[in-house]
Amino acid sequence: MNYPGNIKKAYKTSVNYRNRGMDLESMINDACKYYLDKDIAVIYKKPTPIGIVEVDYSRMVIKKAYFKEASTLDYNGLYKGKYIEFDAKESKNKSSFPLSNIHEHQIKHIRNILRHGGIAFLIISMNDNYYLFKGEDLINFIDNEERKSIPIKVIEDKGVKLVCNYNGINYIDGVNIAYKEMILNESTKS
Image (cartoon, rainbow, N blue to C red):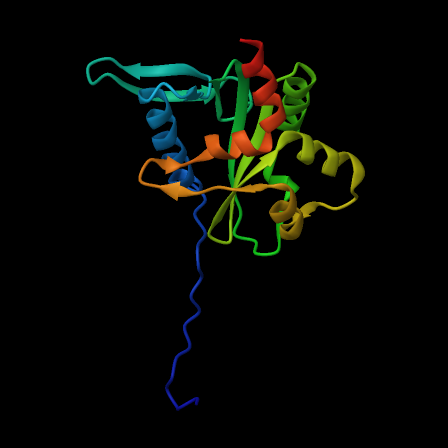
C-alpha cells in the first residue's frame, strides 16, 4: 500500500568479492596441514609473487606493493611420488560453473602440468557441495564444447564429490578415486 507521505527508499546491495573463497581455502589449508602432519602428502598454498615498493621499517609493515605476475594455481606439492597442482574455485551459480572463473593463464598452466604427467584439478564449491574436477575433464570440456560454463550435471557426473570433516576437505580421497590408475601404477613401481 502506498499511504500519503510514504517515502520509498531504494537500497543498493553492494557485493564484496574481497574475501570470496576464503572459507573454502581455509578448509583446504586445514586438510593440507593434516596431510603433512600425518605424512600423507606434502602440499602447500603457493604465495602470490609480489614486488614491494614501500616499507615502513619502524612498524615492519609493507605500505605499497604490486603483483609481479599472474599467479598460476593456488596449491602444489607431492602425493605418492606424483606432482599435484590445483586451484580452489567457488560459484554461487546453481546450474553451472562459469569458465570465466578460470583465467586463461591457469588453463595454459593446467595443460602444461598434464602434458608432463602431473595431476591437475579444481576443487569446486557449488550448491553447498565440494567436487574434485580433473584437469583432463576441464580441458576436454573447453576443447570440445561451445559453452561458456560447465553444467552442474557434468560436474556431478565427471567430478568426485568430496567430504568435509574436522580436518578440512578430504581431497586426497578424491585424488585416490579420480586418479586411481595413475596412483596405483606409481605405487607398484616402488
